[in-house]
Image (cartoon, rainbow, N blue to C red; front, side, top):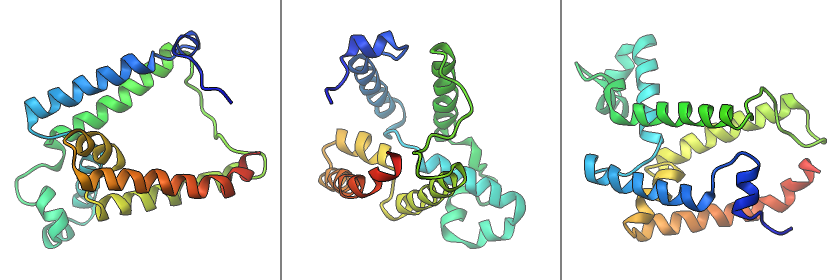
Length: 178
């Protein structure tokens, strides 16, 4: 199957991928210039979890080293700029979908799997990815964009492993979608 051309993608209500890639590069550059950090989501997500844990079990936040570093004492977990990055991604994605008339509630799945099982697998996959981001010290976006941009050998090795793993499981799992 031949990949779609940028003009065909734009005709379907999506932005030109080359222009958006350059815009993302400019945002990454500005991120390093203004904050001395790259882009990523796992740090912001960890702060949301810390905030939630602080609401239901504040003593756990103060006694666990990982959470204490993110939200113990007077430091507010939701005051970090990564929280605003995640909010901007969510709002921007919704606005983009609304402008392209692509916002609707649905569960995308293959005909061999029920919507309930698709949601279970999505939750399990999300939990595994969340655990993996803590093991690898960052999410795939942070690893690829930020680490790759500064030519970190470890980040490049991580991305090769991610794509290699995806190719390894794509063929056996593809039959669930056909």
